Length: 386
Image: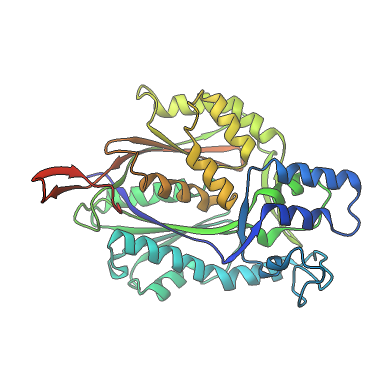
């Protein structure tokens, strides 16, 4: 039996900030000249994002004449501070365990799998570090056996969820009885800063916070039937882009380089990467494309000549949550997994983009559990909670 994603759980911080409020906050910072204001408004308005979630509770009061309190990111007058990387990472260490546990509990409950059955834990993150890390805390907080093997994929960027799922698939192939919990957590908003640099402005306009977890096994007797069967994976490096999407550590947070060339590179390279990935299999029935930004989705849609609406799930997640780095693709896959219009046997292609520029791909087959309809005496497909 092939490995399958039995279920996916998601979690976001409670602080929700409308896009226009964050835009006005950045544009209204002291010392911002008219040109920078225009750049900020253009970037935020073009992002196709309605709202985002953040662990920075100070941002909940944006728009007030005088902000209450005196936090590490915003002073009482509403001016954005430049906290050290240590201060930012302290928040990461404090907040990530709860978000990880929240998303994992949802995934385990939806899968009908007890935490005591988990044999392997894989965590994915690029927005902070601490040890013992999120993998350790998941074992402690959820009651996962202390003998569970733990792995962490760090600093891979937005594409990292698919390598995490790929690793879980390899484990399940080697140990068919394995039950693997994959958890992605990203607190991108920890790294905001006042800046007139267009690349930093673009980063501030799209990134957000969230966590997502997937339960993966090759054992058909584990958990609910159905799910996303994991058929194959591909990794590709584009011929250029090494300096266009870069993630480094600075004294005042992690620094994202996200040049205007990224969507153009994706647009030029995506057809070749996907053709090599799909081979002779033809077009999939559904797409889960990481929304690095609206322009990235536009380039993928045009480059692959997709039908209108083919990547609506990606656009919806971007609009409702922003770009949560590695966790985002799991939000999209959960939406497709629970979508009754995507039937049994439908093929789903996942695409994610990371520093390098790297293209990660996954091909999956959706399986909908079959149940007997007692009233009609017939056998029907039930989408339910797969």
